[in-house]
Amino acid sequence: MNLYHVTCIIILLAFPSLVMSQSIHDISTDDANYRIINNAVSKGYLSLYNDNTFKPNTPLSRRDAVIIINKLEKKLNTNTMPINNNDLQELVSLSKSFKKTYTQTHNSLFSIQNDNKMLRHEQKLLLHEITELQASNHRYKKERKLLFGFIAFSILLSLVS
Image (cartoon, rainbow, N blue to C red; front, top):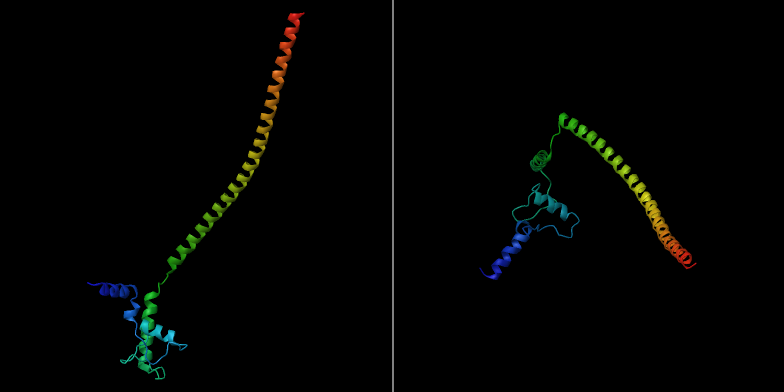
């Protein structure tokens, strides 16, 4: 395969709407309702005529209306999930259980936050006390050196006299 074929295949795979979309010949893309009409055609609710025209001014026959209603009804029935009473009761019980769990978790988190605040405050107090103890320990070391100095001096004085 040459590069042209590979490029074409990549473009068609990346943009499948280029292959699938049918252009509507009798409605301009500037028309305010073009997007709505194109969407209805692409979803299969309405079809184009063989010459790719929509003919928007053609009246809708009863047959066409029934076909459209049938297609819409099939689409609606396939997308609905009936919920029975047991499912609703289960959802209510799960909701209550979740609410209880959420409340307990929220209260626990609030309690943990308060404990954290208290711990931080106590940590600051302990740090302050440790700093004071270190300072007083330093003062006592100085006083002890001075005291030993005086004792040594007094011993020397007593030996000399």
